[in-house]
Image (cartoon, rainbow, N blue to C red):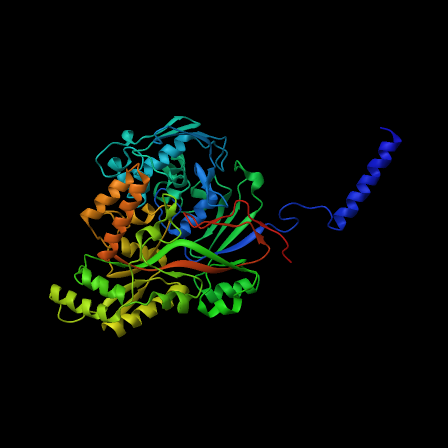
Length: 538
């Protein structure tokens, strides 16, 4: 090496050191900041078994510790994940996925067999998975789940370790998005069999193929995720640790946020909205979610359509959105939110508006309904509610309104989230304050819930014409006609008031400015932390 080269190299090193000291050399996403995110969850995850679990809190964790064939990107479009490619037949009914080289957290490869096993396990009638129906587009899936067919007839097959072939009953426009959903995640047969009923109940009783792995779980208190070094795309993962703290009280979350112990507040209530509005750390999350009252039609009182309509018409939804929450939520005009599309258009515009406040008509309908049922005295009604701060004021408003408008005394039963779900599943309620978020961008993700016998049709409402319309729409290749069938089905649902839609939620959240690149999803799981990072934390 010559002297000139030695001198040039020395000068370059000196300049480089100076630039580094002055901040002139970029450190990349995150720089020298400690890559630790402190997030909040509002409830204990009821379960992390992806084949069985049903709730949004569990989906949030699963979305970051597991990965399906596809995942939603920052633009909420499905992008290849464990699948590196897919071949779709001309009739749009056969999907052949080619898997990339990916590993589980214990170093074993992720194979097509893991997908076949997990999907068929979710469909196995013995496991009573409430989300089994989301796999029904697959040929033979519904028949197997309902005990009318065999597992071998379910048209999902691992051709080899890297090839998964899936045959659908009919073409559907959103199937790739569905494969990003939790129920479509893979599972290892050996791990499931090893732990049996304890599978996924603790960090050491499951394996992970997502960006992170669960390393600590203090039940009803906190969870800790750490970067999964075996993840196939680990170079894009910047966070080393995510600490989840369970808190359902907004004031507690805000205190932890202000003292630097949390980087995020899930949903401000009205008492904090004005204080934080306009600040740089406010994030408005416009969800594709509908909150509603679910009537138990097996209850004598709410079996009557007029009584259900009375409770629906008694409420002024704008009070709940504009005076109670004040976070940007919109009063519902139907079940399906306005940001859901069908055949490239807004479904809400196609279907129309159905809900209105009319206290006088509500009182009249209540009296007529009671007369039809032979009920002479207005009974006391039980409302099953949420234990979260943001829901308590809604529930108190409904309680007061039903008393003032209808003369009905309402007893609010508040239970922890898991117990509330158990009561609903058992049908042990009269009215339940409930919510549903879209699993994918299509009205079907809301409308097929109310088909006779669906596990989430907890009020047990049934209408044969409605069932026929949904069944036709599920298999209709004419997407324009399909859209009309779905609109007609929603009209039946609203005319019979199977449920009382209340509002489409927007959450006003707090997020520290140094938290970057958290993806928010209006469909499926709420958040993706795969490419999130910390930068500029003081």
